[in-house]
Amino acid sequence: MKDLLYYQDVMLREFDAHIISKETDEFGRHYVVLSNTAFYPTGGGQPHDTGTLNGIEVIDVEKVGVEIRHYMQGHALELEGFVHGTLNWPRRFDHMQQHAGQHILTAAFVELFDAQTVSFHLGSEHVTIDIAIDTLTEQQLTAAEIRANEIILENRPIETTWITENELSDFNLRKEVAVTGDIRLVIIPDYDYNGCGGTHPTSTGQVNAIKILGTEKMKGNVRVSFVCGQRVLNELAMRKRVLGDVARQLSVPEVDAATALAKILSAQKHTEKALVAAKEELLTYEAKALVSSSSGLVAAAFQQRTMQDLQKLARTIVSEQEDMVTLLVSESEGKLQFVAARGKHVSKSMKAIAEKALPLINGKGGGSDQMVQGGGECIISKEDLLEAMQNV
Image (cartoon, rainbow, N blue to C red; front, side):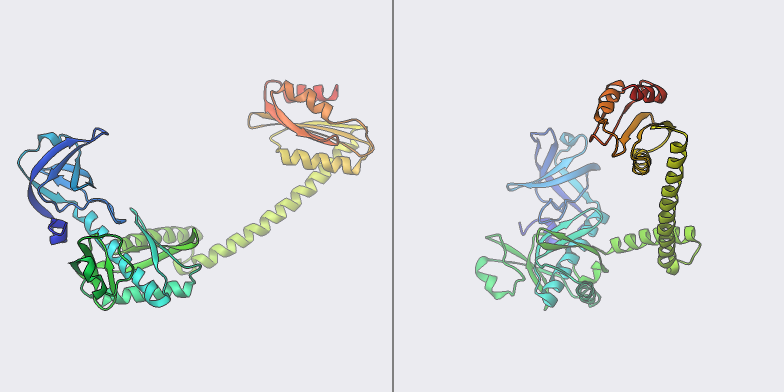
């Protein structure tokens, strides 16, 4: 392991090696095994490298047993003898920045709050660590972020060394290592000592910056999302675009966007409440108008009325006219809906009306003796459905 090119020189971007074997796995994917490689395989929370071998794309790299398999796009079997490998360097360096940033931020949580990281994931946009702690306050997050960026600004070296199990006691490791045999340590002197098989830059300054984005509860731990290096600038650019767009739509400076938006949302809530009250009042007037033109039975068909409107209208009618029955039908968005309700001085069950109406529209519904509702297909007109309900 210690002789692999990505461990010998983490900054190596190109290399030469000869092909040991060319195979196809059980999924039909072509891969080659090289005499040595600078391509890092997926492992330890860090994704694999990509790049090319003699111009042919390397799309995946996996360690299977003692082999490091380079999965190729296209005609991998054409490769012969010595090959020239070229890494997708922006991807590799991004992974190095994120992984080193994780070490630095994790160590900050340990140093400040004695809170260990129990898992780590390097995603394509964000990085997450799960911290073994019940809660993290905004003040704690800020303190950890400040401490991590102090370590970056100091541009401390990031060193690696290989040791044996017998030598573990010579180092103040952040956590116990899970491997045996040769053990690789990644060290930021006087700050963090950790067993790790990933790739990292040679100094903390190359991480550039760390920015915590948010937290969430995760199985008794706190998951912290963050970005490092170029991803900080990408995140800032994205948020700048969004904030700028919001500010333009609100016609205010960006610094005033949050206040302006809060005012608009507050006004919207008041408007919505006023609209609900006005709608309730209109339904009351509509109910009185329907009652005034009817005797014992209110039957009406509507267009584009919601089930909620029909129900409120029916309740208003029968609550004010306790000896009345109301039958309401609406055609809305290609469906027929109905409500049937009775006043408390009426003995007739509304279930009988639903039993008549539902088969006519291939519908579903339910309710009680006092009130039923249902909906179905527009296979008859709303007027025909209303007439059928009146004839029960």
